[in-house]
Image (cartoon, rainbow over all chains, first blue to last red):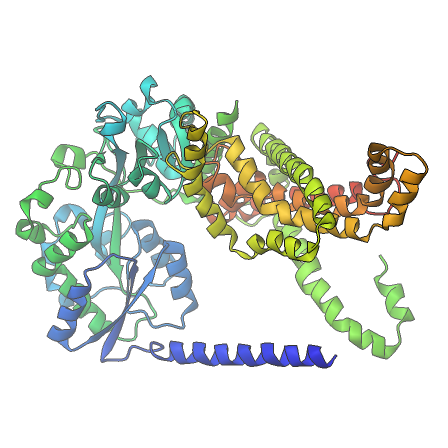
Length: 358
Length: 278
């Protein structure tokens, strides 16, 4: 009994110490106030040098925190607690957060640099008139492949994935919208299709891809491609850029039938305590010089037309990441199709996954 | 069932002691189960419906259920086949508690970490393929196969199978074995008629502890099997995280609970009338 009491005492003591440390750690950024802003961004998604520049120019201190999924980010903002002044949700999450009233409307008068953004990337369906968001980076869904493992085979169409020589070679994304979307695109339909017939056709076409499918996974694909464990992957341009950074053999292509166009966006969540500073930060990031430096550091595609002019032409003219007009016209942003449709997409995707066994 | 009569028999003080237990049972056992059952009758717009149960009996979900059972069965079987002899030899070693500790230590390491380690080990250029290469077997696709899935799952569950079997073997009175041999039984007969029936309870708890979580595995199906093995767990995850169809997710969870309950009934450790007691 005495030992039990002593053990409980020790546990209690350690818990209290940890709790105190936790409180102390959180104290630093409970409120940003006027002298600082809290930026909530994806990991490795901003040149730290720019944060220093911004601090020097404006005298506003930047507290920088990172997240690794849209859902986790929204949960933290929904729950409050930390006063994030800037966050970087993807386009569907902007829509969702706006619906949940988690975002503050932007004051365009305080964002003169907004004019540098390519008009193609403004006023998109997920945020009409850019009421809540400004595009930060954009990208596509496409095919990453390693020609050295494929006797020099190259890709230009989604249909190339169905080639019989690719037995057990392809890695797909474990996500219904992406995988059915690519099948819809290969059939010439919209990846936002809500026609049951088209979706069924897309699923049946996917089933024919089964012999070529090596696995259907998530982010682990990057490592598998880098280590040459896999030769072909359907993946996002950002992930492809990471792969190419570590393995020079890998190439990326946006298939000619069209594909998904995605955005990460700067928003001011309702947790903001320094709205003025947040606008200043967005405006700073929209500055062509800063945007160019950031794009070269991060390696994703910038929506900033003026920045593109300043960048190394090798990067700015790379058609894999800045596809030409003809392909860009084929790209579509995912629309929010509603839960009913999302359910149908997932059921069809599940049917495709389960028939691999037969 | 027995809740009220038990309370009647209790003195006030004992009742006071029982409060935490009942609070726990109600808050963390009864209430969540009731909620899951309740949600299973709701459709996407929150209306009462039997639709989810009808969907469950569609070919897709039945196939999923069958595949979950099949793989859980295989994982349990292989765990048992490896664990029983291992536990048996452990009881015969000199420092058996130490050896047992070595088997338990890996279960202290985070599951996700171990799973990721296997991605490297089973890779095309990983150590497992290098080992096969020593015997002149060329590089094989190990990852994303049935084999890799069952291998990793068995590896993860095996300590939970060994522990109860080890305990029941350890508690076995050695004189019973001596008696059996003295009375002329062969080693095999002694094992089959004396040792195995007496350790059946350990086997049963091991089977329960492994089979039940194996039935709702999900993460390993993606990381190690590349979604070539699908289980109900995968579908539940999808319904809660992606489609936000909590109703369907709950319905699947209800079926898993029923399956687990049946499993508990079949393997109930009452000492007599078990599966193999002839």
